[in-house]
Image (cartoon, rainbow, N blue to C red; front, side, top):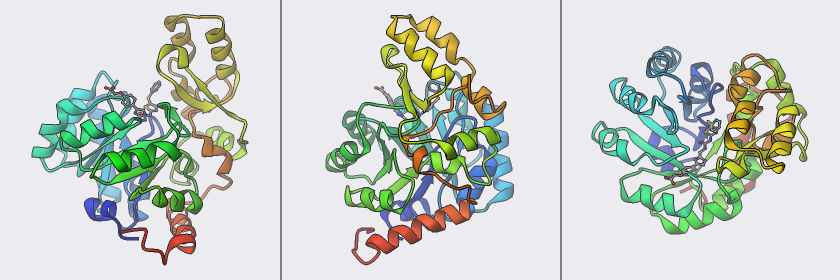
Length: 312
Ligand code: TUI
């Protein structure tokens, strides 16, 4: 499955793991990279030294390329950006902001830069300042999202830029991969399905919440604050949405989600915590190893479009 993305990153399959906060640590990243995709360590809001340690541990488990995702709202983003260069990381993806101020440093160090974008405007801007590719993330995705669905966002970004586009949001099987290829994507980023893999260190309750999720179980909180976040519905999302309806302010709402992702991922509190997951949670039915999942995705995609010259 050779595409511009496999060639750019030196990987076997154009499958990238999302840089999910608390979830995307080195066991998962190494698992995805060893399976032939691109694993990512999610720096989230963690201090730079935690990220450095994670990079070093990942290198012990894999000699394949892997990357780091920087969450640009993190208070440690500046330091993490430097650690990426110091530790010789080959690929960086960014989320929740505009990474322009780090671009020159990364490009000079030969780091491949792949911003995650949720709009055409940011995709164009990222191409102008030297991005190697972009991830076009539709609002089916989990966590912090934009306004457009994958179905409409990907083709618009494909038309607007000349760098390869990686589709994200709502992809959980070969049908989604094949569809993304037809929209013009040259790679796919998956988060939710990788959360349930054997290598993923999330609490068993978190995995079960995804495995049991149905189509109607996804909610978006925070539309009123300008920071929409998709998660599985529970007591927290219920309370949050009620508060939003009653006109609650930012601070009151923040209190409800503070530390919520850690609560769910680490402590297994899937009732009061924030169980971030994409809409594709409803399509995830089994816990596989990273190797099994990547092979399943590739086999299913090949069966649909393998002979059709969509990859290159
Ligand atoms: O970043 C993500 N997904 C995330 S980040 C995250 S951490 C978090 N935790 C609690 C509350 C809020 C965040 C959880 N999930 N995906 C990539 C992504 N980036 N989606 C949307 C964007 C985005 C949004 C606005 C990128 C840029 C942007 O504006 C940039 C600008 O300068 O206009």
